[in-house]
Each structure stands twice: as structure tokens, then as C-alpha cells.
Image 1: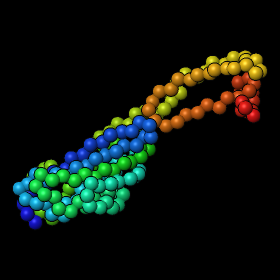
Image 2 (image 1 turned 90 degrees about the vertical axis):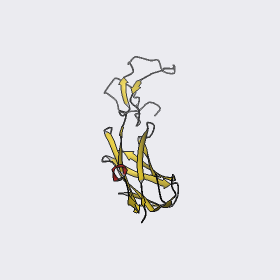
Image 3 (image 1 turned 30 degrees about the vertical axis):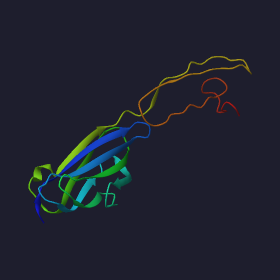
Length: 171
């Protein structure tokens, strides 16, 4: 293939409501010739699982790694691969990408890249509601405080003294 410089860029953005991270991998042809059969490869971070992938042109295949076959890129042309992963814990996630094709790359130093995304802490209940005695039929408001950015927590309210009943409220 022709001598040309195709570089890869990668960014990661976290979605705190569902504990997913979306990585965007961009291949750019810096010229001076058309880059033939350009492919971008994305390796999923440890502590994550594949959710989905799309590309701005061409096709996407695989999950480990995810491969986007962009086809030819004109000089100054770009193509993107977007990969969404589900984080399985709150560690930092490092996505890695590379670009290749049927061309002789004049600057192989920009053919790989990585993006580190630190997940927020999981949702946690930080303040329990205070107990009390309430009259049958009266309205009661109980509040809890939470911290963190993802996941769900729930409370089940019970009748009776703390720890002495297994009958949930409303039954």
C-alpha cells in the first residue's frame, strides 16, 4: 500500500446512572495518500463486559477485541468506532485501541492509544432512618441519605420492634 500516516485517538466517558463506559476510537488519515483497508481494534478493559459497538462507516465485528473495518480513508478523512462496556466494579478501566490497514504507516508512534476512566463509587446508604413508635393509620415519612453514583439500593420496612419480625409493612 501507499505511504501515509494514520493515527488513532481514544476517549472514554462514564455514565453514572448505569455504570457503563462509552469509548470513542477515532482513526484519522494525516496523508499524504489515501489509506486503504483501515481497521481499528479496541480491547475491552479488565473488569468490564461488552455491551455494544457501532462505527461511522464500514462494519464492526467481534467483542474481544472489537474490530471496525472502515475501508479506505481519504487524506484528512476520519472514521469512528464507539464501544460501550459495562463496568463490573469501581476500579479504573483502561480501554486500548490500535489502527492498521493496507498501507505503510510513516508514523507508527501514533498507531495505538489508551483511555483510563475511573468509575464512581457504587451507591451506598449512608444514613439510616431513625426508629420510632407510630400510631396505626398515621402518616410517617422516613428518609435515608445516599452517596455514590451507580447501582440501586432498597429498604424494606417492617412492623414491630427492630429484629423481631419478618412481616413487611403493607402486608
